Length: 321
Image (tube, rainbow, N blue to C red; front, side, top):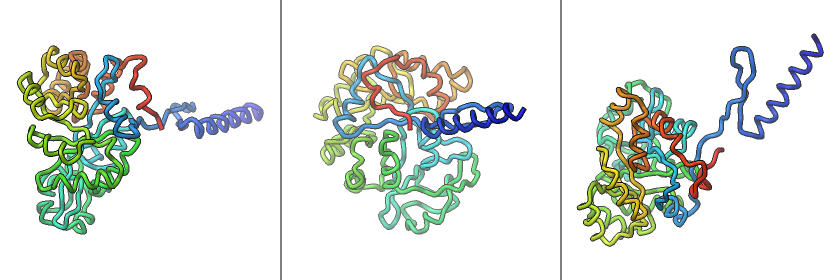
């Protein structure tokens, strides 16, 4: 009996040593010790050339999810770094986040103009100081208070390096020049794409920062032609194709230009998945959606996981740490 106990103890020590080296953790499940991989899923693009290569469409591309507002779940509020970290435990991801500006000119992550829905504070973001916002706590989608604070844009940029790609939704109160300055100051050009909602806005952003990737709304053949009139190279573009599924032929037309498509499944299409089953996410990808912008990134990623090719020219950008 003593010998058996010795060998069991020795085995646990060996497994513990292996876990430290491999990024795995030991957990007890029904009185037996099992190994669970605790490493996070990361996407790493070291420079802007790598970012352009990553977003250059190829037939062996790996389908992805974009976590809308960071992918909030119960206990994890929108636009919080802790929420971003939670999603990376399940899948490599693009994080869509929202940037607003305080009265004293600090860029923070916040979707709404007002603070009431997502924080313990009140008033408009643009009417309060950063000092006031620092004293607030974030609330999750159920209204439950969390221990998490409102991050600054700089904090999000620094955290995201080597971990996720960002698509940055810029609120009207934020000058493009200030946003670009913070991206450049933190060396975040490679992993930060800026969302634009009109061709005029895309042209303006491109003129200020031609090195950055842009998310541009392109929903039909007419808008493809209108975009080409802007003079922005297709190598700087990720095409947001709207919140309704597009014909496969249209997605193919964008692919022929080397462009990734982002389908917004947030809202109606996410609700359809809840009602009809998550397998519908796979159908969107099979018809040419490359990135699914979703409020359910963990579920959507699981549904499309089997559609990733066994080998891909994009593999080197994906890591586990």
